[in-house]
Length: 115
Image (cartoon, rainbow, N blue to C red; front, side):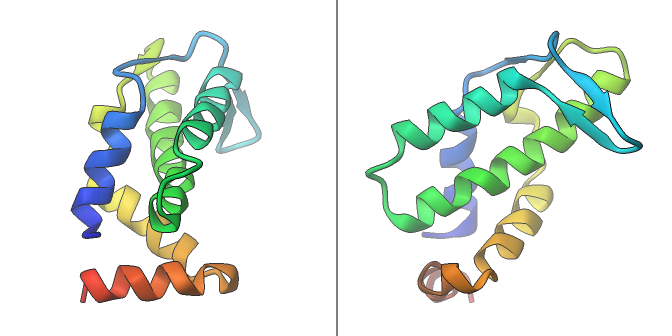
């Protein structure tokens, strides 16, 4: 599957808006949101029978969404939309995830569609 297809699948699998009212800043650059973490678990459960490459894309999308959510929260906004996640951020986290030793099969599949 092409990276762009994985990205679109992830964007449409998450709800259109994520409430950040429970968010708390942690340390100098962290944020904790139970709502956001629970949604990642829900998406993982919903896609548990999807191909491994699709399952491997869930966490990278969550990471990209989390970074955007933190920026929005710091700016005083109380929600974030997965449709606003930047492809470059998702791609960065996806490549990082796929380069983990336990993801070698998914990396090979990804490379076969994304030379």
